[in-house]
Image (cartoon, rainbow, N blue to C red; front, side, top):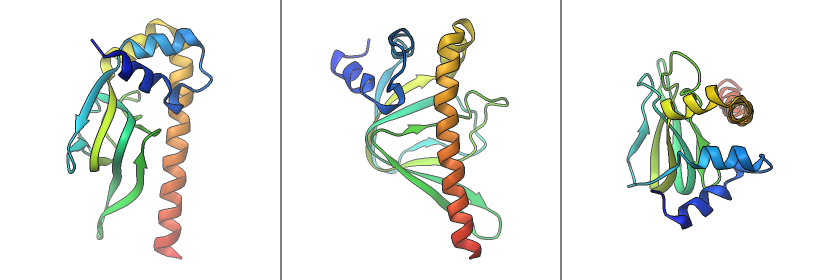
Length: 152
């Protein structure tokens, strides 16, 4: 069971801002707190996307493999950010590498359980999908800036 202080930390995460209480409660029921040491991988590009993360503290780097130049850091994320959207979209494979730059505490969600919840409760599915589209939009904007820097 997730400790009450963790639930409060997760409840105050920006991912849940202005969401209906029943949506917050349903998603929180799946939250598990997890600590990652510096240098730990949250996900690797191409691997099964089996989790979703809300960063509670710490810092992670999001990188993409670029042909001919190797890894490119797309974004650095910290407390208040979400990691992962690939878990929702088939074929459920990570699109980026994500690793901790410093010790990081997250709320971690099992992707299969979260997908089941979204399928069984379409209100939850709508709000989770809407928030994930915001995450995707921010990642695309970051990638665009990186491309502009590379080719400008």
